[in-house]
Image 1 (cartoon, rainbow, N blue to C red):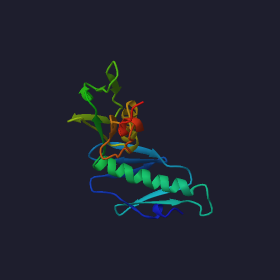
Image 2 (image 1 turned 120 degrees about the vertical axis):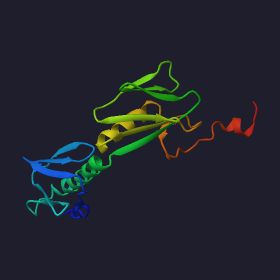
Image 3 (image 1 turned 45 degrees about the vertical axis):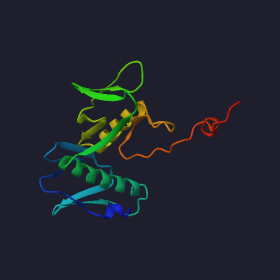
Image 4 (image 1 turned 180 degrees about the vertical axis):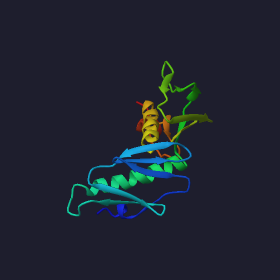
Length: 184
């Protein structure tokens, strides 16, 4: 059995966890999330704790799924209670972002602005060249942030582009002849 799956998930006050027809539903102050429980895995909710176990003890195929189910339950509880957010930073001359309606418009060195449509359950905020992607589903928040970053990832020579806040980029020196001041 997975070591992490043995730990019970603490269900916070104000969060409701129900199991109906093999579907785990978690509702809280921020919204409702659902997850289909894989076959052979049992989720029990008692005394404000969610415990994930396997029906039969000798099934090796279900061990990875056990940890996945526990992680999904923990992420759903955190998401509906406090939500998730990823922060992206724009760096470069003329690089800027703005929210217009449901779209995020980016000016990142192309001849045209790049527009990104907002996925359901995702919110965009822009302040001082920092884009905040927030929502209750950890997977969709991370996917949307990665999609935005993939438009113009930071490059190693000048550091221009879109990157996560606090992300370190290994800088390269450039041409050796330029840095040494050598001539032909």
